[in-house]
Image (cartoon, rainbow, N blue to C red; front, side, top):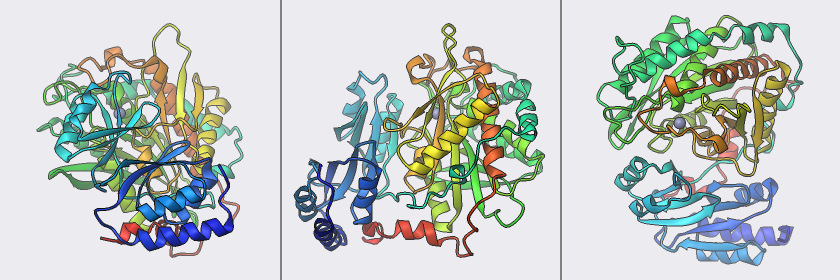
Amino acid sequence: MRIVSALAAALLLAALLVMGINAGPESRLIIVYYDGWEQLRQLASLGLQILNYQGDVLAALSYDEQIEALRRVGFPVRIVDPAAEPQAYYLAYPYPASDRSALCEAEAAYPYASDVFIVRATPARAERLALRGVDIVKLPRSIALPSPQPMTAALQASPAYSPAVQAMVDAVSPTLLIHHVCKLQDRDQLTYCNELGTRFSYASTGIDEAAQYLYDEHRGLGLLVMYDPFLHNSTPMTNVVAELPGVGPDSNHVYVLSAHYDSLSEDPENVAPGADDNASGCAAVLEAARILSQHEFSHTIRFIHFAGEEQGLFGSAHYAEQALQRGDWIDGVVNLDMIAFESVPPADHIVEIHAGTDPSSLALADAFIGSILDYGLLLTPQEIGVGATWRADHSSFWSRGYPAILGIEDFDDFNPHYHGARDTLANMNTQLMVEYTKAAVATIAELASSHRSSPTPTPTPTLAPLRMYLPLVNENSH
Ligand SMILES: [Zn+2]
């Protein structure tokens, strides 16, 4: 593919801008093949209304003149939905990947990247897709790309062993982690580990009890805690957000450790214990909060439990959008989702760190893997770049231009109890959860105490995130 020359870029910019401000029925959903992060950034800066990107392909809303302009400068473009409906698209990951029969629940399904489709669906059809086992991710009307200046201090952090961080790693308690999973997998908290709980997003009580449990646990540590409520399809849902404020001039920089707390199964109203998916991640966040809250850091740390993940990442999408609107400086998000399963044998301890192709997110993944190595943890990390998944809450931050990674178990050794009534503590590998929690503690501790080599930008912290947001002109059109 030809590199976009200055002249061609000018032509493309003119076509994109002129047409981009008109929103109308003639917009088309297109798939564009591109080559590398710089080209992706170039397309975004020229005003293409990107809905999603993968390693070498992106989805966008576009008009005929834009499509011609893209083709003229050498981009292969495929029109997949000639009469686009901007708010109706989801990424869809059939499970198992070879069984695509459930995609018939959508109005239309378009092959996109490896094992992932773009589907067009009403909210009701999207719910049916999720209940038939398809992981779905609601696509925003347009995304923001990260600032060209990497925001994460991870790039500057020189990974070095620290006895102070070693002490925090050593403080991780397997007993407390298991205790949290027990509490979360039960509906009836009086009955310990009865394997009959549900944290289905629409369940009448279990999900609220879980939110209350998370809130109380964080408050018991002395942290600032708040509910972050939102409506999804007129159902009230809430994230739970706890904060450990940073100390000093860099405290406006934030690191997030997160995990969704809702769960799913074939009979979710009654039984959805979700121990691995994702009481394990929530337990890690709680335990990291317990340990880190006993120390001071120069950066602010937020511990967040997201709701509505299984319906299409709605809690994290809400949070990331609000963070961008507020102008929060989130330097990195470490999201944990399913960190407690592996088959024994082989007990190879392989875990996947999904970073995508953004340099800041890759630096964050390097920091996480560096922690695993520095503290001798029993994990075999694999960094996933081009093929990284969007099917967890970290991707809501990617869509809003924030660096983020997903920590998850080995996809090639997939939990057979996934989204089932047997996803319980009894079927978990607690050692993997313990080691993962240690890695999260070490990574957040190191990042949150790192010193920035460049001065902190003067107040008006909204400037940088908003500036990268604005070129996507269609976001503001109606
Ligand atoms: Zn999950």
